[in-house]
Amino acid sequence: MRIDRREFLAQSGSCAAHLALAAGMMPAALRNAWAQTPTGVVVAREPFGNLEKVADGVWALISTPLTGERTTVSNGGIIAGRTGVLAIEGFQMPKGAEWLATKARELTGKWPTHVALTHYHADHANGVAGYLTEADHPKVQSTSRTKELVLEKNQPADASRAAALKDAIIFSATEPTSLDLGGRKVRVIPRSGHTDSDVSLELDDPSLVFCGDLFWNGMFPNFVDAIPTKLKTSVRALRRAKETIYVPGHGAVGRAPEYDRYVAMLGEVEQAARKAHAAGTSAADAGNAFTLPPSLGEWALFSKAFFPRAFEAWFRELK
Ligand SMILES: [Zn+2]
Image (cartoon, rainbow, N blue to C red; front, side, top):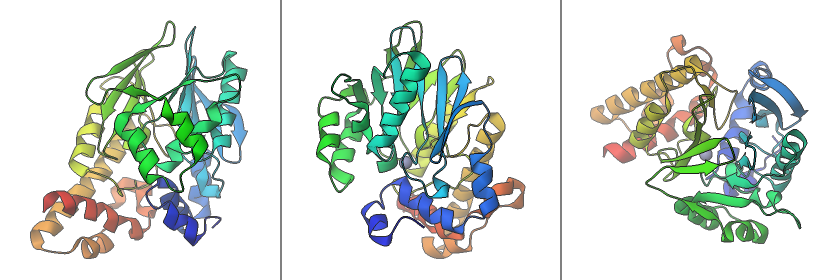
């Protein structure tokens, strides 16, 4: 793997280390399947990801970090209105954010006017300075807690990242925020569960949700900061009755079947963790012994090494 041990330790609070480790254990066929299942029209293809048009004026960047390419690592996207363009996520590296901004200008005629971070993890936030240029100063927005966590936990610190966040406009942690992009309103909904502070970015027409890391499609999620009962609440709240496009934090764009499979997978983990806790089994033992039922299909390909972390998260809440 192209991520070395020291780097892994420095980033162990991020999704990136988790992904890099997972990649080494994942069969090549699955790594490729991840990269090659677009639901929209691919308008740009790079070693680190594919930019897909998922609706009029909406594009999702589906990162493909399992190849070892770590420019972006997380998914993100672009939502365009008549007067404003929102870029979602700061990505792992500034050149990832700069790339997305360049694409936004090619596709919409505008550099992003707004940037939103869904949560603090390095692969979603660390490259945010890439949106700022001599001429362009988009409004960078996050919750206060996310800003605080980026600055505290994402080490080594970086002066340009701190500068990009210094004047960040704060999303309310309790009330939805509406971003008016001109003929298009994006609702920013404060949630939690993947971390202490997550937001989803939501459109009603088309029905489309950028879920951040509250939804992972095709890979077992990172529970390092998870609060499983809150995660469960958030995941249920994101599910819409009508036909909806769900852009996950990691993995291909999903619709109801993929989203429901993820919900079922989380349910299996909860059930097993509660049972183990009640039986007095340790989180490590229970996690190491855990398997997902074959009915959940491809999830069965995950390494067992990631289960204990999920069980530990449940045990933190159950004790
Ligand atoms: Zn994350």
